Length: 389
Image 1 (tube, rainbow, N blue to C red):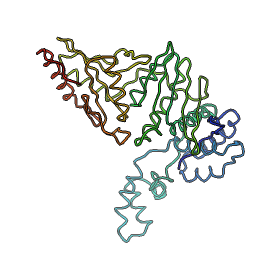
Image 2 (tube, rainbow, N blue to C red; image 1 turned 90 degrees about the vertical axis):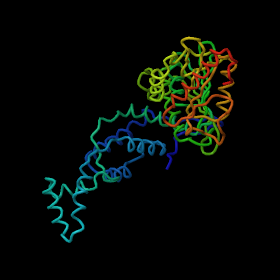
Image 3 (cartoon, rainbow, N blue to C red; image 1 turned 120 degrees about the vertical axis):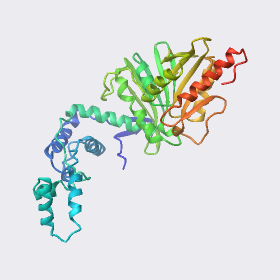
Image 4 (tube, helix red, strand yellow; image 1 turned 30 degrees about the vertical axis):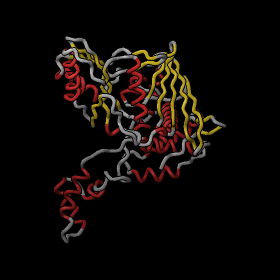
């Protein structure tokens, strides 16, 4: 059951009710409750949480969000022992021996006491899993993590998200691309604007898409300055969420050069199979009017110099692909190959037919890409007109 997000709709403005120092007493008591039940089954902790005094936080939505966040993230003891015990016990159970005798017999086989066997028999099942001792976040850190949950929860109901970034924008843009989000990048002086389709703009795949969109939020803290504006639906009404530099959310680890296993496998396989082609990974952005295009790869033939842009497309709709193709054609980058994830169609529409498409599921058919490139290279060498992309 979804948790109600702590926020208010004031006119057309969505105002998040972020956690603050005023919530520290409640969060501290909540953390202490989890720690107190270390080594005990989940059901014991759950019963205690229901009885926990909640008067220290004025908004019950905050209380529910905090409890569920810790419940979901608090580690449990992981052991293969319960399954092993059940395998032994249940082989003995069909007989007519009394329960105590079966437990004693199994105890001798497993070198455990009957009470230890009973305790561990179902210890890996929901409600019986043991709470683990853990160095949990402090109340102040928990506040920032919960505030991130609030923002991500609101973006999950967004139709459109616009980010205005000043400084350190490349990691955000790159992450959006690697996670397959449908976005357009606009460059205006020193500022970068990223326009992203929200989950509510899609027909399907909204769950996975919403999670990946939320991954961008903690990266924003590493930009010199940022503004986030999103059209979201709250309680059936559309409002605008506005956030900016200094919003109290937990930042991500310092951005590194993000990598995609899919792209990495493609690059390695391509370099093995296409000896006559130079593969340029993450080429320079291509100016397009006041925006920028970020192709994944640019390949160039070693002998005749013909070029081709290769882009790996994650989530997509036909309109999104048509816009992307129109942009590439207007900047005259040459040939374009789109490797499109068949499973990531977010609408009922079909793929375009006027471009070279290599559909894939989980792994790109590198041989098909190379075959298309070689066909173009051969036609170029024979001085015939270039085939249409």
